[in-house]
Image (cartoon, rainbow, N blue to C red; front, side, top):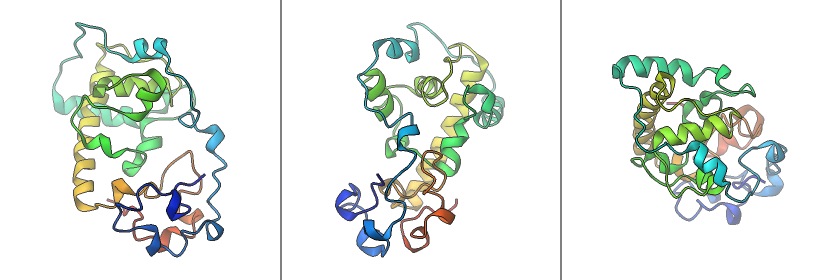
Length: 212
């Protein structure tokens, strides 16, 4: 289901200055995207018990140090890897889910380590560091093995993700609706109704995320 379909189903409504009452398409009967046909295909959708094996797989081994190199070079390499579908076994890349800051929770703006919903629900981890979060994404959405902890690739993705995080913080400062409106992301591969061209409500929703 689309959490933005009806005001009573939108947990952001009370705190969102661009609440559903301003959106004439908010009512479920007026929103053809209310039912999400991708729900069953969303690897984050299923409710499962935390897996201790997964927790061990994505938790940095004690004493491990990330690859150290020139930060600017790592960021440049990380930007390339961010778009690299060969890192997955299912054709996804980091950018698939996060193009234009899509699919980030507001917690992404917080300094790491912090609590993140996916590793908490799937692995029972109370909090993760950024390198561990990248490994979570490698294993769950991208359906692959974690990167070697001391690899240049992991360090590069961490460096670039830090830059993405800085951009996300700036975006939130400029657009206070973005973090509180789960309808905002236009590039969610799990929901074909997210794209503006497929959602007739998008143009009339003042909370719709503007391209940065």
